[in-house]
Amino acid sequence: MAHSKDTTIAFAFDIDGVLMKGVKPIPGARETIQKLQDLKIPFIFLTNGGGLTEEAHVAKLGQRLDLTFDKRLFVQSHTPYHDRVAEYADKTVLVLGGHGQQIRDLAHAYGFNKVVTPSDFFQEFEHIHPFPEMTRAYHLEHGRRHKAPLRDTKIAAIFVWSSPRDWMLDMQLVIDLLLSRGGYMGTRSSKNGDASLPNYGFQQDDQPKLFFCNPDFEWATQHEQPRFAQGAFREALCGLWAHATRNKAKMQYSVVGKPTEATYIYAEGTLRDYHSATHGTGSDNDNPERRIGRVYMIGDNPESDIVGANSYESRCGFEWRSVLVETGVHVAGTVPIHTPNHTVRDVREAVEWALAGGE
Ligand code: G3P
Ligand code: MG
Image (cartoon, helix red, strand yellow):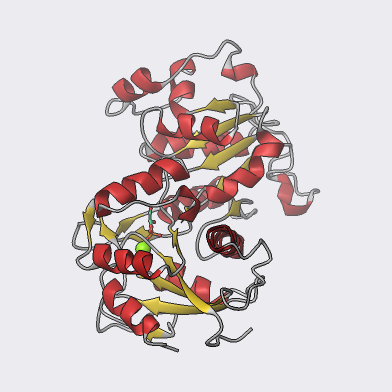
């Protein structure tokens, strides 16, 4: 459906590099969002950040921007992991990323009941980390001993939730488990490298499935240049895997987060449902007076926000437009690898342009 005067526009806001730089709001962000709230124009947040429940994360953002938001507005990197709970609720999963008990608690809050962390492995396997001197105290503080030893516990899946901190331990663990017999730490599959099997047998002995939720290689923080994000960890891991398998097998994994289609499907459904619930148009979004026609994705990362919006084929009949800002990963004066529908200085200009009917 094309955009028309009978429909409303809507927005999907990236957070880091658009509304925030680290813990600091980007100038104009607060006023811009408040204006949309006053005008009752629908929007969602669509971020590859994570580490907290949707409710806690939107509350944190609200606090930083000094505004109040509904938790239903928030789609973050690992929001699609909700769809994995049914399969893994009662199987043991290894979670990576974050600090302290943050990700264990988060995974529990999602409904995963049997959650282990790299620090738990550190507690049980004395020599798992060859160079533990910088992180030993941390793992001893945050790891847990489990009643059933991890040595006898099958790890059914590995979920990366946010940026891993102790890359060495985490990478060692993932590679160990992907090469293991059936997901048991301390074992090695005899099928690895078996040339009679397709893909040389790697990851074909019931090893854990591997899930990532943020493809971003880098992200905008308060530092001068962008910093490594979860995608950088994945690239490094793929490099180790290539070496461990002598380039004979590609690492098998699933990934959600912008720019994947799965995340845009999730985002669009969230926007439609929230709009329907708050404007009383019913779940079919079928009131032409209130129907969402066009969605402006406002982002700073061409390889995430822009290509995602450009390539997404709407399931709800929305018309997605991409708007690139110059306050984050993309640098003013350079040519972005994916061309947006429009480029502006910052989020304030982006919204002004869209409100004025920007095509
Ligand atoms: O780790 C967070 C980062 O990769 C991106 O966040 O809000 O720019 O999608 P955002
Ligand atoms: Mg961003």
